[in-house]
Every structure is written in C-alpha cells, then in structure tokens.
Amino acid sequence: MKRLIRFDWAIKRLLRNKANFTILEGFLSELLGDNITIESILESESNKRTGDNKSNRVDLLIRNNRSELVIIEIQSNRMHDYLMRMLFGTSMLIVDNLSKGADYNEIKKVISVNIVYFDLGQGKDYIYYGTTSFTGVHEHDVLQLSGQQELIYHTNQISKLYPEYYIIKVNQFNDIAKNTLDEWIYFLKNEEIKDGFKAKGLKEAKAELDILKLNNEELADYENFIKEARDYNSLTVTNYKVGKAEGLILGEELGIKKGEELAMKKSSELFLQKQREMARKCLGRGMDIAEVAELTGMSVDEVAKLNAI
Image (tube, rainbow, N blue to C red; front, side, top):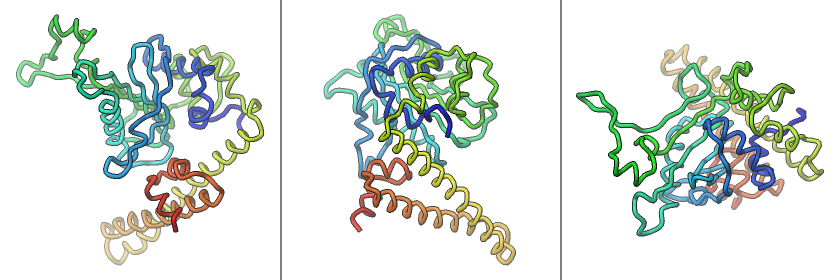
C-alpha cells in the first residue's frame, strides 16, 4: 500500500475539516490560477434529491471568498452520460442556491471541477476547460457586457457569469510535471508527492495525508475502500472482456455487427449482475445505503430496493 492516502477517500473524510482547508485551497489556487480561500464546506441540496430529479452525487461543495460555489467531483468508474451529469449538477446547484423572489443578478457563480479516471470523450489533453460565450453569426464578434452591466455583475466578460467547467483526465497525464498544476495531477494519479514539488497545498497534503496518521478505525475503512474499488474495477474489466468474447463468437454466425450488439448487451447484463452482488455484499457488512450507492454507482433507490429484499 502506498504511503499517501488516495485523494478521493481523503476528500470525503479528511479534507472537509477546516484544519485541512489549506490542502484544497492549494489545489484550487493552482487549477484556477488565483489565490483561493475556502469560506465553508456546504451540504449539496442536489445531492439529496431523488426520484424524478435523479440523484446527483457531489463529493465536495465549497463556497470560496468570492461567494462562488465550487463543485469537486471525482469519478473512477466509467459513465456514458457523465457530461450530462456535469450539466445537471451545476444547474441544480444554481436553482438550489437562489432564494425565492431573489433577482437573477443574485445567481451564484458555479465552478465545476471534475477529476475523472477514465477516458471521457476524445481528446489528447489531460486538462479541459469550458465556459459559455456568444459569437456573432455574421460578424463573428464576441458579445460583450455594457458598462452598466459590468457594474452590476462586477466583471467585464459574459463568460464569467455562467458556470465554468474543468475536466482533469488523470490517467492521460504522462507523469512529467512541467509546472505546479502538473505536480498536483501527478499526486492525483500516483498518490505520491516528490521532494522537489512546490505547488500550493502539496506540502500540507504530504504531511496530513500520510497513511501512518490514520487511527485503526480509519485505516480499516481506508483498506476496505481500496479493496472494494479494486474489486469493482476488476469486475468491470472482466465483464467487458467476457461479454465481448461471447459476442464475437456469436458474431461469426450472425455477422460482425450483430455480434457487437450482443457483446455489449451481454457485458451490460453481467455488469449489472455483479454490481448488484457487490451492493448486497456491502449491505451485508453494515454499510449504509448512501455509501453503497456511491461505491457501486447505483442509485440510492436501486440500493434501497435491494436492501428491502
């Protein structure tokens, strides 16, 4: 086991403590290119929604010194609809944080930081940034704010009014740290901080996220988290390979196109079966429904139904 704790476990247990805000402030400062101070860690209302509103897991919701809301979400398991989930998360956050009867100019700025450990979309880079701007159809100029609007919104760019998105594709990083932000991504990928690294927050992370500082209860929880994560990833890879192999065999008789369709279907069925098996196993160990849903990628309602059986 590596000496430093994985960031995705730490962000749920350790980094919510005010004493450790320096670590998160360092990460956000390097990513956003500014000195970020965390005012508070918030409970996400969208995280509680169920039923028709879906269930949007948010690993961490932060309010910074500018009253901006920052979502940090870490996703290890492949999700085909993750890009739309990002949109849903920011949209619900805006709605949840606008008081009834408030003016539209009171809408909070939202920054969505997504740390993904799978190949999301197609692209060669490992950091992607997205925002909203308006370009003229005929003149190709970028729409600007008027002088009065700049005073109202305290910015001179329309894009700064809308949610900003960051996607960090961790596994695509080549392990060569060319700047301080790369040093953070190296840590996210390898759970290691080299002696020469100087990025904000990494010094504190190296000290506070040392696995030797965990008490017996925390260590047991962490070891179980690592085991479950590895089991889940192993099941995903195995199910995909098995389903693809069986589908290709059928494809010799039914044609390549039909075989690929069956392979995907078989893989999906096996995956769902193993996913439910893992959920039952976790429930049997006394884990609560929300934790099981987060670990397996199932919805809270799906886990609750299994728990009722």
